[in-house]
Image (cartoon, rainbow, N blue to C red; front, top):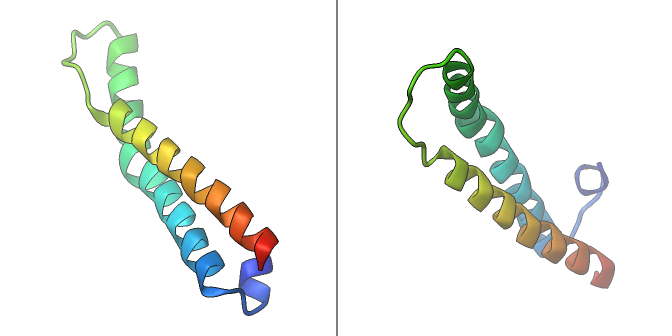
Length: 77
């Protein structure tokens, strides 16, 4: 809300967009794949290994870096 309500520095705006984009990728692209796979595992199907977990973890790591940088940029602005 703070970013949307005022004219933040460019670094704050870019880091906010990156964090939101990574969250959107997790929610729209990765989580549905993981949910479908877990549903299949729970009914006892033998399913192949999935790289979706690695993508999810990579997004989490990216968000961590972006949010730490965002906090630093916001405090120093």
